[in-house]
Image (tube, rainbow, N blue to C red):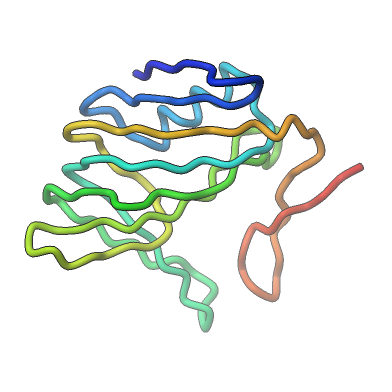
Length: 144
């Protein structure tokens, strides 16, 4: 599913295998290394992805799937926990064959080529998520 190397304490470089789903592989890595809070970034080539956009009027996500070869020019996000499980908050910008870009909140993406990420473990417990009624978002919840 993935290969990794620890660059220094709590800092990893990660290669997700071809045809794997990025969010699932990254969450599995975070579970394996018991990462409870941190950041992630990277680049990839993908053949299919579902992006989300939050409509603030309805407080509901609108999902759209793109089934085409794209280059992820920027994947960035953070790692926390919600209800004891890994919670990934990822955003992505991807370029299409015509060099136009699309992006949004990343729900899923399947690698079609390579996926190279960095992960930094903050080493902090107590970084959770709570649902915020006003925004409709799962916001950071800093527990002591």
